[in-house]
Length: 377
Image (cartoon, rainbow, N blue to C red; front, side, top):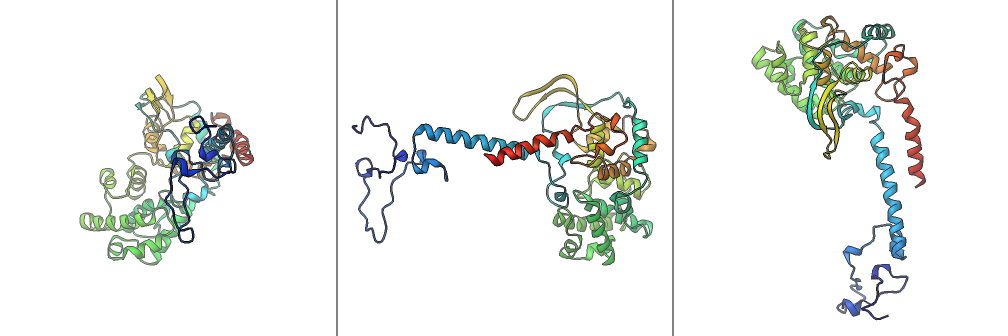
């Protein structure tokens, strides 16, 4: 056929070298020094490793692309489903509860009624019985255990440092770091202020974000020396001004260091369990997802998205005498029974009262099916 009527693209050639001289002349070159490079159209360049690089019709190319896209879609779904491995809690990304809910733009507020959920006392009593053995890591290595043998002033600072290091770090790792600091005499404001940051960083490794936390330890020590004579702030507002100290840490330090209960200490374990039990929620008047899609309209209830939202919702109805013990109780329960991944609902004595019981366990078969299907493709 004439060149004007040909529909075959040069990139779809079936084994014959295309005649580049007619459409795209190439300057003559010395084949010994610089071999000629064929001119290629970037718009029609096949994907690396695709079958189109070996020839084939346009219809065959389209069929292959569909298969590739299908495989990528399945792998993406599997990646979204898989939660963060437990060993990543040592350092790196936050726990799965921190980003477990879709970020949305909308109008939210905590339920203002303050009515307690049904059977909450039975559930709390059942959890206490399951936790009576006190065999969870938090029972022996929690932040409140730091510096037990120290004088009050030094112990308060030790609890503050332990709280700072505990963020996104397992209790046993935090406990080990505190012990190394204590053995090297670096658990007081004056000694930390004089110490080299590299030394502190080496002692607290491998807590999560150890480089940033070592720098914050130096800053906190200097602030405590300059403003509080080596002690720690005695108010929640001043504690929250310290670098790296958030609401959870500040409430814990106020409870343990000053015996002043300002609120509930809610970490990711408490946040997760309260949502699973249906103890906390927030109202949604209008909610749109990240792509603008309407998720809910009118007054509907949604899970709390952050530990701070959980704290505010929980304090509306939980009696104040439970504000301090609720943290170690639920943290230990979350470490042993109501775990982040595949909770042990079968051994939980309050599963009959839990609306989330056995729901997460039932998802695992579909996950394995997706994984096997992805491997086949």
